[in-house]
Image (cartoon, rainbow, N blue to C red):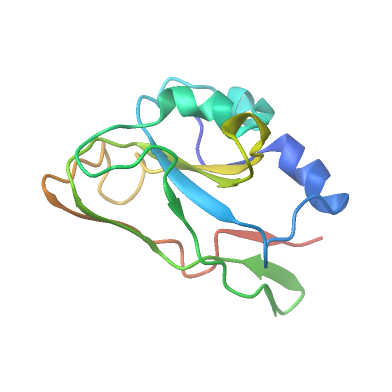
Length: 149
């Protein structure tokens, strides 16, 4: 089972200026049924359309997920930190065990994936299943990911 995975194609794209995490339109989509997917399978996914087959559905959940508000990239010592505001889905009924963050462009086939985050292994282990309530995806206080040498 995958844990948090930064996509291989994103790593290449980051170094070749295909991503601007401060200004790109970024989205987060909730997934379900990801527990049997190998880490290597997630790492090799390129576009949102590949992860979309695992996208959850439910009451008041809109396919494609929701927009993220990126925080400014900052340095913590010699470590660069990238983070976003927490994501909120209001009054939803759904099941989720993971999510993907991606750069949204015209269509899912062209929207490159950034990372997969395993929600199953969070402190309250298991599938997250809000019932007619709010679901908040609270990112780690140390950032979504860090870049260090």
